[in-house]
Amino acid sequence: MKILLVEDEPSVAAFLHQGLTEQDYTVDLAADGLLGLRRAQSTRYDCLILDQMLPGLSGLEVCRQVRAHDAGVPILMLTALGETDDKIRGLDAGADDYLVKPFAFEELLARLRALVRRRTEAPAPKAVLHLADLTLDPVAKRVERASQVVQLTAREFALLEYLLRNQGRVVSRADLLEQVWDMSYDTGSNVIDVYINFLRKKIDKNFEPKLIHTLVGMGYVMKNEG
Image (tube, rainbow, N blue to C red; front, side, top):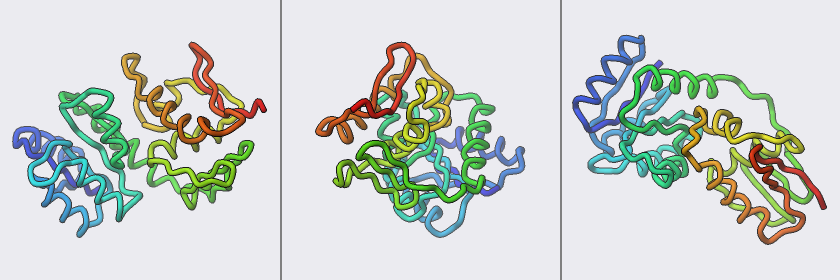
């Protein structure tokens, strides 16, 4: 498996390069965002590992530009910034997962395996999902409510799709983090609540009936109570 590692800290880059190589990964290195972007656009990789704070071009901007041309390549963002807002910016830029420094190398390997596994599992053709006057087309990546197009980020779309596929069933925050973010549950994180609030503003605030419901202490459920 071929990986592009974009990391400007020499010690971190050397440590990750050695560890990944010992695990039989082929690793290309880039020490700044501009070089990383050029390599990502000129070579096919199985996964990208991006540091968020890079010279030349930030990891966020590299991620956005890569994602504009390759919607499928898994991207793991590395950063010393662990606040919820920082994580949201990385995920909204198109990253599939987020790892805060310092981290255990074994955790990075586990996240890489999960990202690549999700990409290589060939999905069956997906039908359009419906609930009341809300529709989601997984292939066209299009959402409408009451025949009005709703613009969602990639992460909002993934969250809404999972909720719709499980409509009528209560899903916990741990379920959402594992299934939508490929992360283990962190009781100190409110990233799920933040994204649920984003979705409510876009698909529920100006419409009836309300479709996203909170069950205190249990999680969320999508259903039509109208």
